[in-house]
Amino acid sequence: MDELDRLADRDDVATSAETIPLDAEAFETVRENVEAGFDRWVGALVRHGDGRVALVRNRWSDGWVFPGGDVERGESLREAVVREVREETGLDAVVERPLEVSEQTFVADESDGSIGAEKSGVSGYFVVFEARSGDASLGDDLGRDDAEIAAAAWFDSVPDECEHADILHRHC
Image (cartoon, one colour):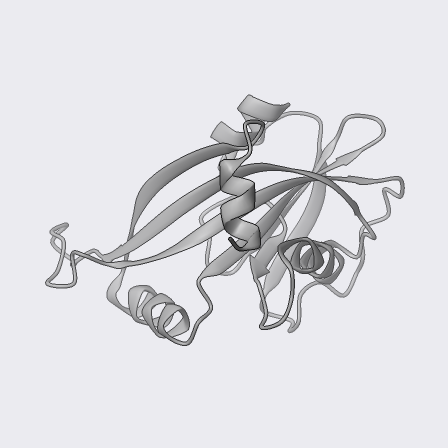
């Protein structure tokens, strides 16, 4: 039983499944990554002591999201969360506990709205952890490259255009 299986078996960790339609180019990128063995992603619900939550805007999402990303080879889920939070926000967060495991199936969404021939899609797992940061100072050099992260900010409430609003509402 691996780390992901152990988390999914815990009574205090929510599990879900979702299908995510992507345009052809994005689907191809995800498919290549999954086939190369990168089929696990992490995100962090990072809280400050005053109750605010840190979120980021990246170049591929339509709104604010949890800081997070791919789990690299040889890296545990927790190690990936710490690394991704530091890269995307500049924060040194302490990972407290897993909150949710979601099986995500990505499918190609054709321009006319129909699902393409690859409708079986490719799947991976998104694991959300709760984390804390005593420092509220967000970094200036966000992401691995200049185009990856557009902004990082603290929020007192769920912002408009938040892709993880459902998770925030369940855990905040």
